[in-house]
Image (cartoon, rainbow, N blue to C red; front, top):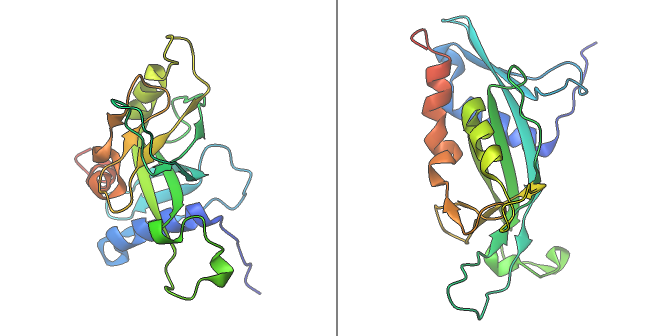
Length: 195
């Protein structure tokens, strides 16, 4: 009899994205820990050809809808996410994936069980940091007064290909280069024989 494993939705999506870009025929496999209480590692990507593996920790947040501000010189995004600042120690994970689920604009604020229009009412963004990049970001996060901050967040608009770190910085800082589609090459490189 085969065991059946469950996987939280954010981890499932990140694993699916990895499988689509790191093909089995090229020697890649995406694996999950047997124990759901495994600290720090949610996914493991292995390259059979080079015998190298990278560990990935997945963190998730739903998005919060933000109303436009009337104040000038204040940039607000339609969607915002919140993540707890955490202790990023060497050897726990090679990469960190931040999964953000958000409603598509025309469905925000509506009861979804009453919506007949479209099958797709949600979308997501995945932001990736390597260990070094994660440590750098966490060190920069502070309140406007320069004190330690407990949270950080990402902001973005519907249909935009950009994403910004919002909370934890004086103003929005563009982090589009950390979206999954721009970071998959770095994950591949970490799994290559030249890394």
